Image 1 (cartoon, rainbow, N blue to C red):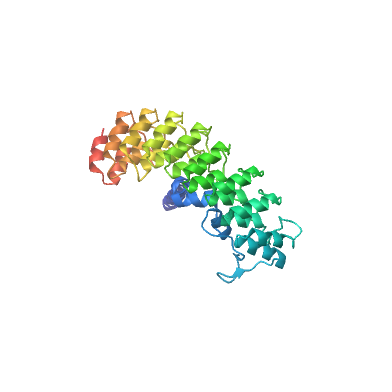
Image 2 (cartoon, rainbow, N blue to C red; image 1 turned 90 degrees about the vertical axis):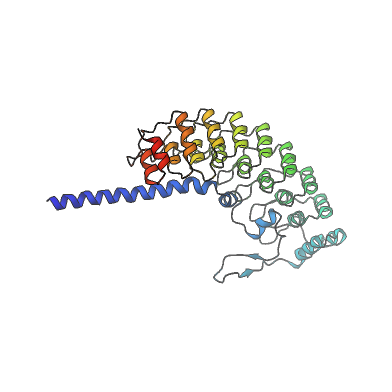
Length: 371
């Protein structure tokens, strides 16, 4: 009976350890990956297929587009009519008289290839202003979307062509039509770091609070790029400084994780809440302390804004515990203690900040935290 009892207890302890391990991995992924630069680009702009890269100005439209197949790199060539091919060739040649003649061979100026690409889409991504103007005069639709959800408008923004964009808007172009990833023009301009284009779109009343399918907004993308100038512009034009995404994460979390004091000050001055907790019970202070970019000045700024030093994440860990585990965390520990951080709080594993410091080999921190 005794051995059976011991075996049962041991099994329960192992199961708990495994559960905690899995939860820690999920916890790690829930915000470490959330704020990685690569993750930002992928979540905001989706998978970078050829047409999407074209929208960012990286590629021109191709008459062949890679599709999934059993053979790696196999290219599927779309079948289009000879008449439409003549139109596309004229666009590529930037030859308006030739284009005018070619259009006589098709019934609709908005005729598209199998991937829903029209002559206007091609002209926009290739930067053919005279062709764009001519096609618009022929009633080409500036809001027609291809298979990726791109329009002539979004492609013009991706090419940094404000002149083409202006013409498209004069003919009814919509700057807030999202592509299949939920990305709108303003987000593309932010990602490219084109402040003048961003300013132009904001003045045209682009939606500064639009969210992608991944929950990103123009401002959160600007924060990821540490572009204080853009963030300020968005705030001045109605961007919400404290609206959480589906994970309960606000813009202040991203600025805190990066310990960017300029962004922190800007957001805090615009009433961002330093006490807000995400669905994973994270706070801006916890993010800032647990980051590999931690700066004393950023921690002090959050504490001065009344961030709670004793807030616990879903594992019961506080900012003091996270700082105690850092080899260079002594100054942060001192800041937290000065802000009334409680060293007696225990995590779910019944460990205090002192115990964690000892386990991490941080002798000076452990001594400072000793009763």
